[in-house]
Image (tube, rainbow, N blue to C red; front, side, top):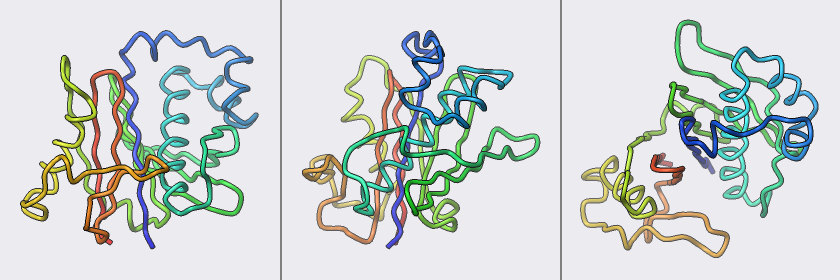
Length: 196
């Protein structure tokens, strides 16, 4: 079965832009190869958060696959990340044990949005959105955003139909043919879905 996961990072928020990428900080969540890539990057902070976003999106995908239950970012490794020439798009490969997750990161000055999928073709088939939601309940807004991008596919569904299971994985009640993923970070929300 094909699964997706997404993650968004608000690069301009002080909690993210002010992070100190010390060796001690990096060693808790990043492999040696990842740390090397981050520290030799021209833009260290965006590179750090790109790797983080890839790990988060991969974790959400792996969790749905049933191969991981709790987040240990150092065990999820970004092994490849290639930029599309002249574009804000990065395509990567993330591994966990013998599992591969393909990622697509879209990077702008103020955010990084990553979509992960256990099937490379699933990345191209996924639909996603990003919105700002200042002074608003992010959890509610991301669900509204999901319903907006789903449109007539789920015209009889409401926010209350978007639930989370005991592992905190979101799903659209009664509709297993659509995989969904939700993410929010300091006033930015992103929803994604994939028809299976």
